Length: 133
Image (cartoon, helix red, strand yellow):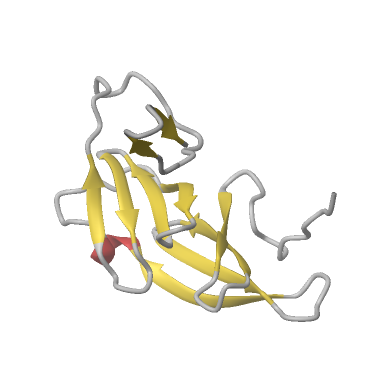
């Protein structure tokens, strides 16, 4: 098991691990209304480089209320999509394309706070009669 030392000032409760565009270890964190992407420096034990910063006020649809700071709640590695939670629901964001999509959310408004999302993909193989997850 290995530990990860984050850059100073990054709240360890508010980030998710990702892979960077060049397939290195990375992480995403929201600070205020900005999404920050970091990647691990090659050959460095504790070195991180902030690779990109996105303004969520211009990124998310205009009707999304940013009364509370959005949160990064998940990352889908196979497709490189970051999952964000804002007061109005869940959104996926693809840093490569800049595409943002709202995720259907069937919860009653204000009923639950979500801390983390673990995305997974599965498929059904009829010849074997079960799902692979």
